[in-house]
Image (cartoon, rainbow over all chains, first blue to last red; front, side):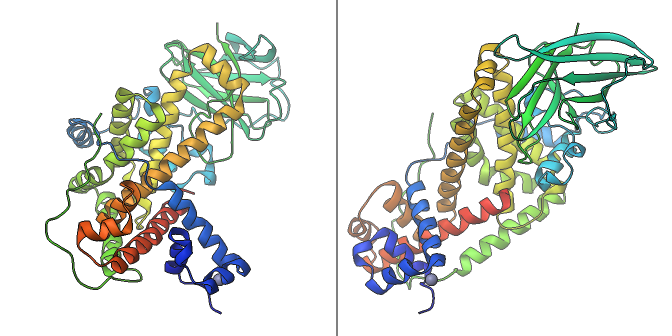
Length: 240
Length: 212
Ligand SMILES: [Zn+2]
């Protein structure tokens, strides 16, 4: 017997008593049709509850007005948290097309160098590196004061480099990503991934820290292509 | 809070044969979405208006369910469509790509808002201490998105199937009651409900595929 028409499978979901027994028998012995049947049952479970709630009047006009104005200039690197999307370059091919475009569109960090991981050193940053420490943060766990390492902002020539040397971040699946959160609690920027799990260096535009981006945050990010903060922070500390 | 009123039943009675298989109307709709996406990518502002008119309720309802705050949902909705416009060049025009793409952007906005809220140190600590709670939230979001995609797909069914499917699944009418209401034979009503379920499944699968 060839496969059962989806229409007949829908009938089996909706009115099993009306369904001919040969359909039932086929599904019991055919995994392909069983999968379709399960999917249709799933849709049947999903229907009937939600209704669509229209967006309030006025949103449409505001969207169109914003669409007609040019996006902010590229040097407006720091955007409100609600529209922050980290640079596409961080995730490479894992980013779905739309997410990469989103990142490109809001142009958060493109062209300024933040968000790019500098080539990771094979070992932890060497203490005799040139430059002076301008700020440092003791990193701790969020739910206790457990030590999670340190982050230092080092000034070299015209750039500030954030050197992160974390520890005991746990072994949860995913990768570790470093963020700077503004002390106003509403904005953040992604610096990049801790390429070797707990240490890394990130260039930060001069002035960013002075603007209030002082809270160093390390998150664990599932490899799901979602470039936003996972909401799961492993360590934090404030640069002072 | 108001909900979208389902269109009142047309006074005329339906006739004609029940279409089986993928209807021409559905194929035309797919072409319509594809060309709408293409116009959006090309920078046509009227395409953005049409995209907004068609999917803003979907995006807004998703944000409302996920954020449970009317003001945040309104703000997120606005940001989703502005972000969609500014990143339009990345959209690959395919029938299901547009809603999948909009929901993807909405997910980002929702997680941004949640993160902003979690700056409350106690809540952040709670999240950090309970990664599984985070996973539960995500799974609930997925389910809401699926339900809304299905609800939207009903809107896009050609009538009388749209009305019949709505009455069957959302109003809970029996097939006989629907037959009385719309003035069609019982067998025709059953056929529309079956085909409707299959189409909703296809739409949902299409959007899920594009979301990956
Ligand atoms: Zn089969």
